[in-house]
Length: 197
Image 1 (cartoon, rainbow, N blue to C red):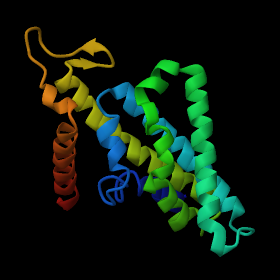
Image 2: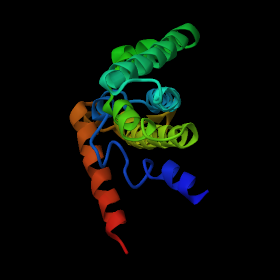
Image 3: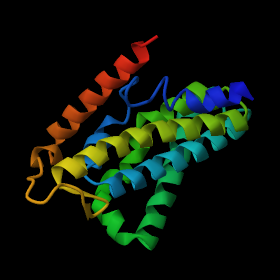
Image 4: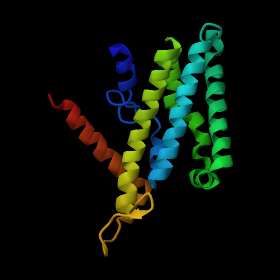
């Protein structure tokens, strides 16, 4: 059981895809102006990572090594398209806010990287846990950055005002450099925490 727990927790904390592999950073800058956007994007990546991990693990005995990347990209693209269609059908306003970034999940290196590094070599259940852990690791970073950007940059959190009356939001945090700045602070804090005995 501890091996499965380690498979789940490692990409969330020890080998977080954004902080320690610098993967998926573009969406971390683009969709983190609102917490709701970050939650939906995190859900999209998590669901896609889990579904991709299951499919790649199931297909590994029958897919020839020469075409494995093409198959993995097709699997990823299929689940991204399904998520995008569902989002447009059931939450059109959110789909418009996220714009092309849901479709660009196909190019997110986290998904292909975990499919290649883990799902292609492991059974279904550990692959599912790895996909879940990778998605959650990506999601918590997005949501953390979004909380600070929305709270300090807009003065709201999920639409509710959080700054004291009369306080001016730091609107620079809404710009991409604001996301870079916050991510730099998070990397520094996380590195300091990891170095502690």
